Length: 298
Image 1: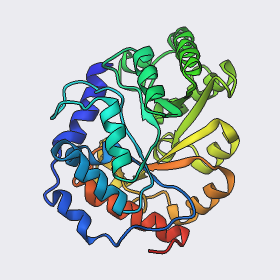
Image 2 (image 1 turned 90 degrees about the horizontal axis):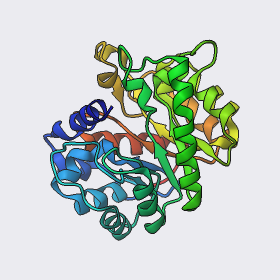
Image 3 (image 1 turned 180 degrees about the horizontal axis):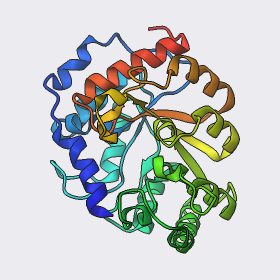
């Protein structure tokens, strides 16, 4: 599993944007939104590796209010990982709030839960069940293997609760494929109460998995505590990761989707583009587009 996750992170860090931090200068001043808007660190990982504080200041100037980051690295990366407390300090210094923090596979869940509590985070997200990396292909597993893993998720939920945190399971496309008649997401929802395990719903991965994102969020209701906002452009080739683009640049029709989502959930949406050609440009374009959809003013 570590190798698969490390590959995903490495892709994000190795794609260097030609414009770098300078690309954010084309963005108007800070936007004033009636709703918060978050950014996930994966989108701007390349810029962060060059200058973490300057990247965060640029992100704040784009109109983002929350910044979500990994508590530990996914593996080998282009730059050493800053400690979570240092990341949190820099986030606050930039005028941003610490958003959803993400479990990284480099250290134990208990250690990272302690870090999350210490920096004042409230939600810790778990990216993917490891059984989906052990099958014949990425995203494939069996019902028996998934059922055998569920107690591990329960252990993490108890640790999170002990530290005053909400554990949120993050979906990928494979979480919407039935295992003997029931999807992994539904199996989690049935096995645990909302107080034990919540969800961070990635709208694009739901769409790729053949699910209506709005219907999914509506059905899960208050269990949805965070959203990932990305889009899908199938014209970019068969590689699912390359198809991922910023909201407004793909097939999801965020102009119609976002207002409807705002009516059914208070969960903060975090822009996340996994392998952008230029992460700062993607972040700037996404912020501008989403603020315009919401009718926010500059």
